[in-house]
Amino acid sequence: MNLPASPLTLEVIDLIGTMVSRFHDEYEAAAADHQLTGAQARLLALLSHGPLPMRRIAEQLKCEPSNVTGLVDRLEARTLVQRRPDPADRRVKLVAATDAGHRTADRLRSSLDFAREPLAALEEQERATLRNLLRRILA
Amino acid sequence: MNLPASPLTLEVIDLIGTMVSRFHDEYEAAAADHQLTGAQARLLALLSHGPLPMRRIAEQLKCEPSNVTGLVDRLEARTLVQRRPDPADRRVKLVAATDAGHRTADRLRSSLDFAREPLAALEEQERATLRNLLRRILA
DNA sequence: TATTGTTATACTCTATAACTATA
DNA sequence: TATAGTTATAGAGTATAACAATA
Image 1 (cartoon, each protein chain N blue to C red):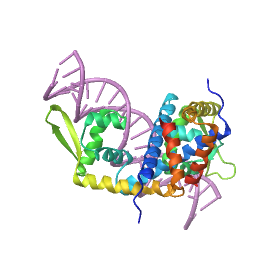
Image 2 (cartoon, helix red, strand yellow):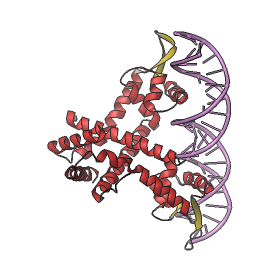
Image 3 (cartoon, rainbow over the protein chains, first blue to last red):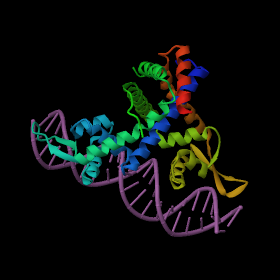
């Protein structure tokens, strides 16, 4: 059983919804600026930390492994990623970002700094307060 | 020119990213629980405020009008929405949620109260602080 | 037998362009 | 001529099920 939410709580939920929507739209737009779809951008960002097996990619992206095949196919056709054999297990294919892929991922990440601008409205101390509140919500 | 972001700012951006990702995934899951896609759920939520012309729906959903045709087709096939003529302009079709559509939208909205639970970790005063910070960021 | 990645299939979402019926 | 909605087409993302190679 849920208690009815207070007007304050409802407003916070609404504000979070607005933030989610805005952040999401701008991420898609930033990806499009680099001729990437949102899913492709997320995969490329994932690979900037290092190569991953197809299986792990599917887990991280929360989708079926069969989807990853097409996703990697399209990025590989543009030489942004590369399939490599895993010496330890010949069933596994490791997907790695190429140099071009890493550069694209870096540029994408920089362009995402749009998120930094709205935060400039806050003082250092206020950003710390926001960080602490978000940490507790997401804990 | 952008100044490099401080570690604090980067952490806040990262926390916001986590919130966006979590909120988005849970919205999709809640929609799926009602046999709706995310796009269908957003359209149905939009119509809970009242009927809208196809054109306005496209604007609100930030997509092309041609997409709305199929979206409404699929919801109409399940009698969750209905196309009506606009007495004032015979070119316009008004899309309205049916009773069943309103009920589904209500249930969906209730199930989204998952967002309320994490907020319970905060005291009333802290929620007010969070609201004020978010308001300024999103202003 | 179980696991990894792929293929085949089907559906939804999306954009573009051409069409129709109104205005 | 301009606008609202539709259709046709195509590409991308997604899930399910069946499959080959390897463990």
